Length: 374
Image (cartoon, rainbow, N blue to C red; front, side, top):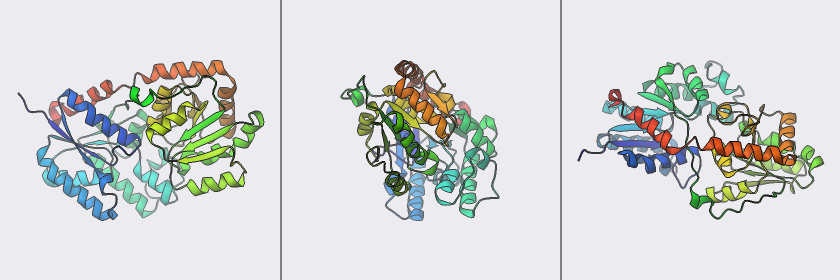
């Protein structure tokens, strides 16, 4: 019996941690063995209690020791795991594949170093930013350049990575997969006559647009006095948003729930009448796939990979980022138009089934098993 090929998956997150990268790594662990692959997971977050340089050195050592035992290497981000993987593979004279699901340099620049430009412009520039931002840009570019192939979850991110200087032929698009486990939803109670709840979720960072979403609540209350906005997630903007709620006297109408488990998140989601993602940047949103599968109508922004998933008026509503008037109009449509509401829910459920695990895994294996890649 031929030996199964072994793949090392280097990931920054893994369940029980939540988020798209953790879910993606879990899918690989569960699905690749059914297609003849053995999977070894190296989870960088297991080392997060150590100081930064120490944990990166420890992770490099783990990758170095594991490389002789595997046939392929797949790094799921270009910096936290990508850099140690690149260095270990360089010294071992091995190749690796890289997944890029976002621009780490831009995200860090927005959070920590005063970057205000949008991602499209940022991906084309270097000289106008502080040295840490330029350093992150250089690292992710080098790691991507040295990878055998780069895999991205949307055509939009293919354009962004191409802006780093990579030839488009080196970048392959494999859309994310999402299938709700029946065990995850069997105990959910989905009401047909829902309360006027708007739900949003995400890391509490500036580009997620939560401050704008909170700021429009007073105008929404003029038409729906019982309206509630519920936001799940944590992040550096938590105290800022909490203070904003206090200043606007919205304590009874806006709730910050913090980080939730996936089970609790789903329970909150199905109670909502509208889901809003007012984001300036989404490579390809795994969160939107979850919401579509759970049958909650969506308002989101016409940016990044969102238009590859949402067709406005068919399976959701698309609005410009941070456009208060457009947000209010779209939300009110879904609060008060049950016919449109149900049309979008049906369209979303029909669309989400095309993003299945079988398709995603087969496309990945086709790349891994290409004769030139072994």
